[in-house]
Length: 459
Image 1 (tube, rainbow, N blue to C red):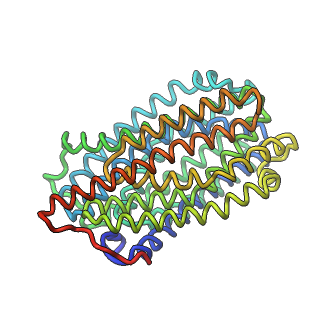
Image 2 (cartoon, rainbow, N blue to C red):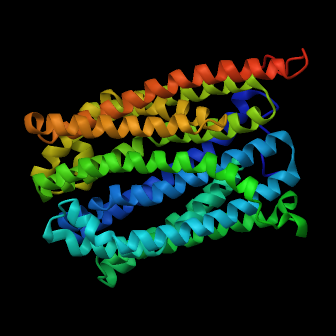
Image 3 (cartoon, rainbow, N blue to C red):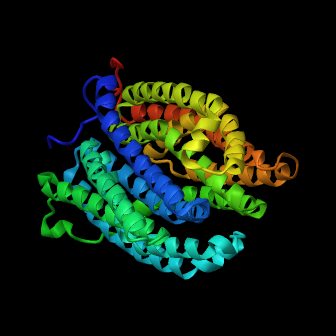
């Protein structure tokens, strides 16, 4: 088990940071090759092609986000079993997880490709970019097996405390992705379809690297009796995974409504919004990674009933989120025009993007803290709270854009994001401290007078 990390032992700060930085590098590399895609498409094919790809972002989040939420919810149980040192149950859980993930892949692939065109029309997609959006979407959704396989396998590895293998996978796939982008777009002139194909092929590589690592772990090798689909285990997996999947999808619906309003303003606004979304996704990655970190950390320590360690880990991850906000919130506030000019060439599009970035930069701390608290609540086995927070996000995002679009124009998209982040943060923060206090009391009661919790250094 040399490649795994036991979060129930050792200095909290050290084990978290040792796990966090490879995870952060993985997340930033993923965003880097997303940026590379955007830059190559924008510079090589023009702002309309960029708008076509960006127009698919909210729909991709709906489908891929659902699968990611399900995979993350499943992985919580892997972390808890690992923390309990119950390896037989871990392997049985893993087998049922694989079966459920395959079924989910088939279902999502069929639904996403069948309803793609109707959905794009409902989103008021401009005819100028409709065909390119369709081509990009069919290829991306047709390759969902690669994306879901990577997300599931990487989630399992993170739950076991292995953040280095996903990093190695992303390093390799990033290099391949960028090389294929340049070849398919600049040399072979395949248009946005080439960018989509490069993404899918790179995901195949990253998935293969993670699977190879999992297969090599001796304690995951299943006996014949463990290779059995267990309805009870599967139900537990679904109870934890479906709410997280729905949370992502509900959030995506809110983003799609915002995309609907943006598309109604014109293609220039669609291009600007696409770039702003890319920056938001990039700059939230350090805090998002802190959320993945506290998820694995909390899952293992919740299984081991080490509540003092959970609280110490939360403090470390909130500190990471705070540093991230100071750096990237400042960039968005003080350098919006320069940031927009990196990915956009049109003066009109740059102007619109520079109106969005400073507003969201001021309040970026809300989404940064949200990632940490939401992941901590989920990893203690309470996925309904994050799902409800997804509903809150959707309602606030749609309400804000509907009310403000008439008076604020494109700036309303930024205020819609802020409202959604803040509402979800308040709910998850309150839920964490309530759930944590109750579960800690229950652990003390069930330990026959001997508490499992004790104090640890956080650095």
